[in-house]
Length: 103
Image (cartoon, rainbow, N blue to C red):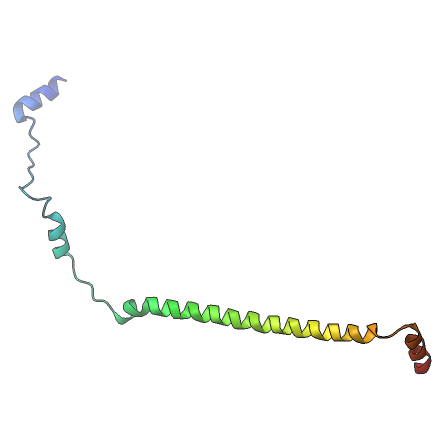
C-alpha cells in the first residue's frame, strides 16, 4: 500500500497517454481509406448466377426423373389391371375347358 502511494506521489495518477481531439469521430473514415481496394473479379460477380442456374438444373432434373418414374408406375399399373381383367372374365366352366384343352 505504501509503495503504491509513493508511486502515485512520484508520478501522479496520469497514465501518460492522451487521445487526440476527434480521434474516434474520424476513426472509421480513416480506417476505410487505409484499407486496400479489392478488385472484383468476374467470377465473384457471376457466382450467384452460377449457383442459381445449377440449383435450377438440379430441380428440373429431379422433376423430369420423378415424372418418368411416375409414368412407368402408371403404365405398370395399367398392364396389371388389363391382365386382371382378362382373368376376371373367365368363369369356372371356361377355366375347366381351358385346362382340358391344354392337356
